[in-house]
Image (cartoon, rainbow, N blue to C red; front, side, top):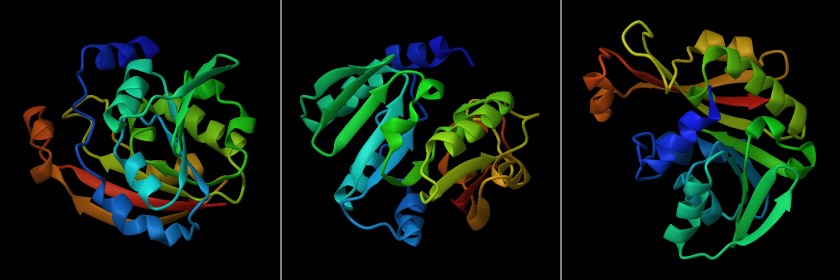
Length: 217
């Protein structure tokens, strides 16, 4: 998917994917990762997600990756934070408080940036990518993450004949196909969420399932 697409969505504030509260499946299942306070966690394609705030409140330091500088600036501004700014290769890195967000192309993320990462929360990265890029994304994660870092992954599953992404449908079988070469994939919850996402019904969906997984090496 052309990076211009996402930059334009943020520039025009067409961000229906942004959630105004913490994600319930994260709050429920994050403790299963068993991570200590003070450890670093990675949030890929983070936007200005409030989930980063919750993770920080749990005592973690947050490393985010986001294509849109508009999203990154908005996140810090909404927290009342003035970030320090530095350049790292092709990335602009902005940091303040417990947050450090790498603004640039995730696929160019250097392994050194994620040294010491203890866990990962992915609610919006995998489902933002079309299937060919999903394979590339899963490989990239396996390459740059420390082997000890588990992933809490949340996906959506719907009939792609009824709606075109993003967000893209990633059925459970697809999750296993993408990750099973490197990770043990544990299904932790599935739930019907169409009633709480009426805008997807307006786009033509008659069923929408949200799935949560924990991935461990």
